[in-house]
Length: 466
Image (cartoon, rainbow, N blue to C red; front, side, top):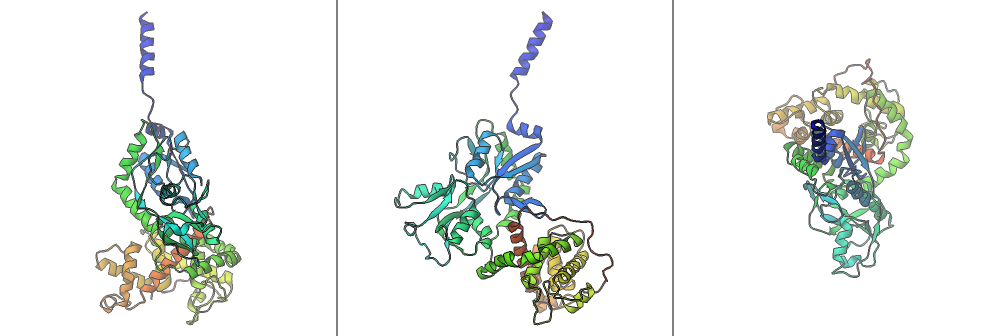
């Protein structure tokens, strides 16, 4: 009898134990499942794998939890929220406006950014000034989006306002439709437009459609708020705040002095010229262990991928090599595309070897590009000026701010190599980065295939520090 009572008591204790919380299940499983959208402002594949603002944030959260991140993408907002409501995904991290009640079974985590909804129209068409200017036009938005909700609210005062809701259209697809003339207008978040307009130079911003809107992750609603509370703790940390600042700078910083003509030309050359030299850029990239798209971006900045390009100073070819550099790199014909690209790659590797190994990426690459443009010696002078000002000489952003000081006598007189056109490497690196990011997005899903060789060991050593 005592044995039976003991067994019954044990069974009672087992049945009375509460089920594990969602957070406990994630920790036990060792995987955080996140669903997002494939776009420049959320999640996409870069040269080394997945990247993007939401990916970086989710990676930080998974790291804090000590679990692996399993991130997937879908274009439909309904599918995003449905995956979370059903438990298929733990979080929807997709630049979603935090509007409680927009989907049954969904709640939102802490707000991490605010965006403004803006109306987009096509260049060359009359600029809309007010809502009534949209009457009769083809206005298209994503279904189940905050933009559709904004239009529904506006219709109370503007009954003649009409629009079309796409069940699965992504932001870039809507921008493409406006750019091509298939649609007259769309609505997109301000940060998304800044990040995407490089690819759609014929689109323009008309006016704001809303006040600033909060963005947050979507989580499953209900009494189990363990994951939501953990996310709130994560976003409150200094690490998360620093990460958001870095994300804003890397992905979402507005494009200054946006050159619409230049962007159209770039996109046209991606289709017409890049295919002719893509395999050579890949070959050269394998030799020096970099992403081929970085070399292609340098080549575009130098010559617009024109093997017959010649500057007034006599530099030639796709990589615009000087006679001395060409000789140093074993290039006999600077107008030969393969020789120029491979020679330029070797020279880039040579410059990078001079940059201290302690400097982490991507700063080491941006400093290398600056030295490639202005010379290693002038870069060192700018780094010395940065130190004089109690800055970090290993930070590209801080050195970038001080490079223009090389044009001022009170500064260049204090360093070894004197005057330099310090603005030139700033613009050079900015442009290469823009082309590089564009190529990453345009070739999303293509990975660099690094090899063990950093550069040919028998490259001659020449003092090119001036």
